[in-house]
Length: 176
Image (cartoon, rainbow, N blue to C red; front, side, top):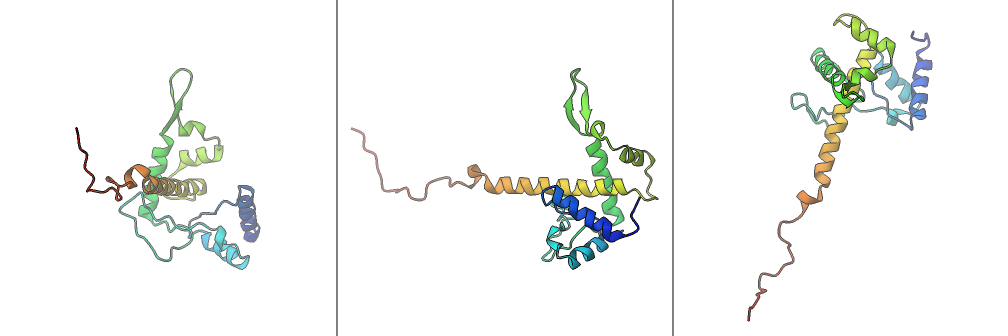
């Protein structure tokens, strides 16, 4: 259940962030996210909040911003996309057992409450664990896109010059 004093919940969230090595917090801006931002502002913790992903992985949503907002805005269309990402993620093969049977991500979900929410899910209702996983799917896709972009920029093979700039064209080779 939710605590009656939300500042206690916010404090716990930042303590968990400390526990996990200073991890950044991400949330939906609606449904309590603004309260976390207000708490972070009054306690000088804004640098511990994650910005909204730029959606580099999706050309329909990608819009570079000069001043990105903290936390995610989740309109219905984006939430549906996140549900699709989550459904695909649960069916992703992550390995095989000793008999060669595939092990899917859903086989490694040990949170009974989350599994029950997945079973009962509908577009009407409050499903906090699913909402958190939708945000996680967007952040995961964003991290993969940023990593791929960084790898392409750092690749020595594609950044090298085809011909060396210092080579002289006046050199000739004579054969005797």
